[in-house]
Length: 208
Image (cartoon, rainbow, N blue to C red; front, side, top):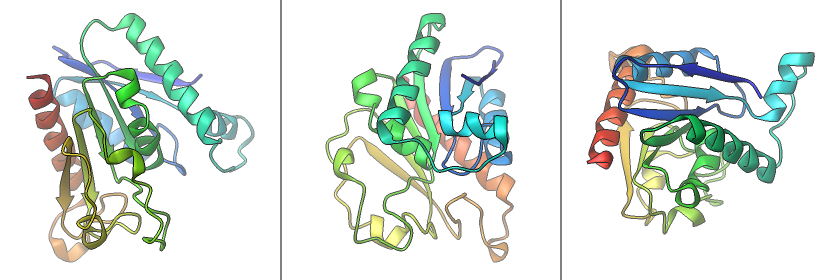
């Protein structure tokens, strides 16, 4: 299994970060987010799901594995990290990676969950929400979401009655990749930095 470990100096926790459906663990988004976390004292472990690992071998784009495979991969990575980690562990993910993690955090009893661009519903299908497991989530969870997210826009998500353990940090003018419109006056990098800094603050609050 492909794994990347980025150790922070004076690390106060380890964050396991999963990629989204279309981009690998070393995409520009994942690289930027990892760098910002490490700069704030959070060690980061990145990994890839089997279908993405296979893409590296043959270069063929394929859809994500079935949910049971995605979940088992998450469990396997968590167990590996737990064996070599003394401090707190936080799960995190981009889009699909976040969704899968959110289904396992209570089971794995980690310290917190951070989601970047959560896929609340399939593209252009807000009438089919994927939120059943979020209604009674117990693990402290931060969802960083763009107000213009095609998989979870502000107006739609505001109508959900989610678990009280979930906090949503909205980024104005931002899309599913947390990229803002030019008229916002902000760069994508600035938004990613803001997202990570908010996440680090949330993690510290969750750890007490």
